[in-house]
Length: 192
Ligand SMILES: O=C(O)CCC(=O)C(=O)O
Ligand SMILES: [Mn+2]
Image (cartoon, rainbow, N blue to C red; front, side):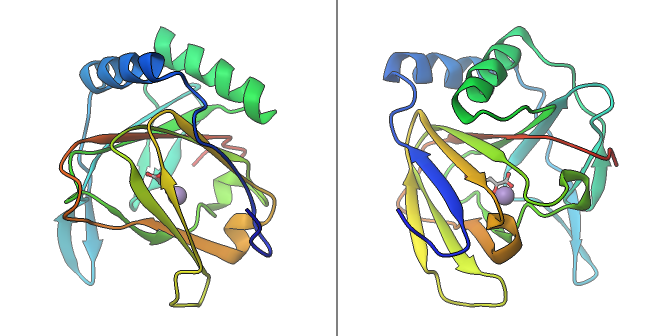
């Protein structure tokens, strides 16, 4: 797929379905989920999903307006990290887990352009569970210019200047009532 000023590689069946099923079940069950609260226009709301941040001890990361100290890599997450590094050619010191419990859970428009990630971050995103639509629009734009259906066991690699020019979202939908787990592997260059 070609999108100007973006560098996206989508591998739909990166994992065999049985392996994807096993990882999904184990990760949902092993993870100490939390639901941060964010201030939007002066009012506090819980984010519409559950999250966990894992990483090397120094990989503090700021998201949803708070600094998060990493949980220690589990054997399973360390194994997944190695597989994702081999595939993407990147090296990562943290992974953000987002659990969308149903189509009611979502993530609003943003770019992964936090200063801690440096310029042109490589981000590898593993999706497990219910397929959800991943939309892209230009920064400063309103129109969705491209959408990908992120399937069970798929890997999406975002590289180059993608985060500089584009925003992404996972919108709410009434069409999905099953959970989806997304893992985004990141390299924190200057810890928060
Ligand atoms: O759930 C997804 O596919 C996207 C997650 C995401 O954009 C993020 O964690 O920054
Ligand atoms: Mn993102």
